[in-house]
Image 1 (cartoon, rainbow, N blue to C red):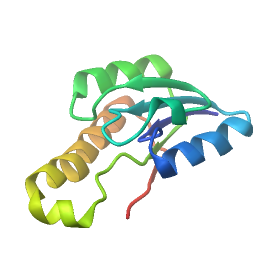
Image 2 (spheres, rainbow, N blue to C red):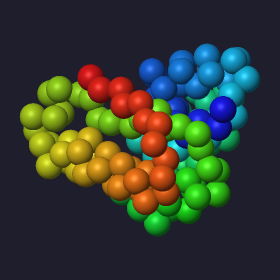
Image 3 (tube, rainbow, N blue to C red):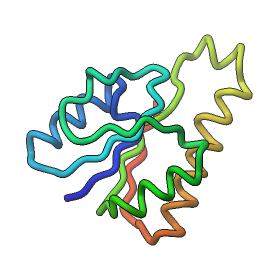
Length: 116
């Protein structure tokens, strides 16, 4: 399958990317590398991008034509979320809505969301 994975350079995302890559899936990883690492992506192709960039997101998804999307991109530090609630809202809620909006526009219906 062609799978688009957000946050695939982070801890959980990179482990899922490894398992899916070893299973033979074609992977495109989309990560802003704010907490992830390029070296952690052992399979697939990494696109450094931000889910806030709706134009890049739509262009990338249109070109890749994924069968499904697995969404790991999120901020997860509890203490920081209390100090920076707006930043967490923008990254975890608004950016997820950007992704869902683009998926709807492109007719991509298979979506898995991982949440802490």
